[in-house]
Length: 145
Image (tube, rainbow, N blue to C red; front, side, top):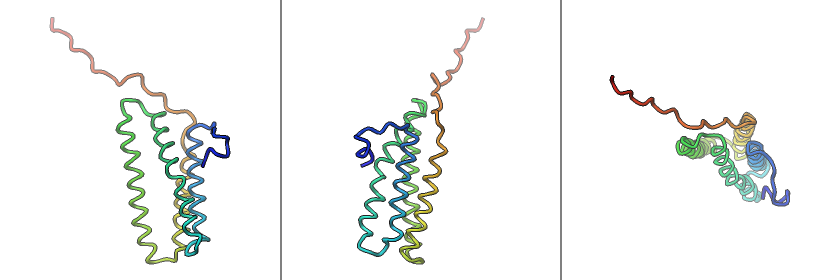
């Protein structure tokens, strides 16, 4: 979907790809505002969700690009945990908001949250932090003289 308009090639740095994908997700969520409680809700939800898999893929590629190989397991675990915690928090918040607000207002709240997340991706630095060549090793014990 994201590369179709580019002839199958998308020559942007990963950080920019991530920003574009999160902006597409935000647009999809924003489309829920005028379509809430109409027959167009389902297609709008589909469009909002269509960006999720590319967002995961590029997120993990960013970790691979920017984290020392010895720390990849931990970094990938944090990334997955962050997505899962965010999803759980969003579901809980949505449940609370649905009982207190109109569907249009709930969609507006989530569009603002998605926009804030998308803007946050602009803080990703241009150059990845160069990985260390190797983690520091303890000095070898010297024999007693």
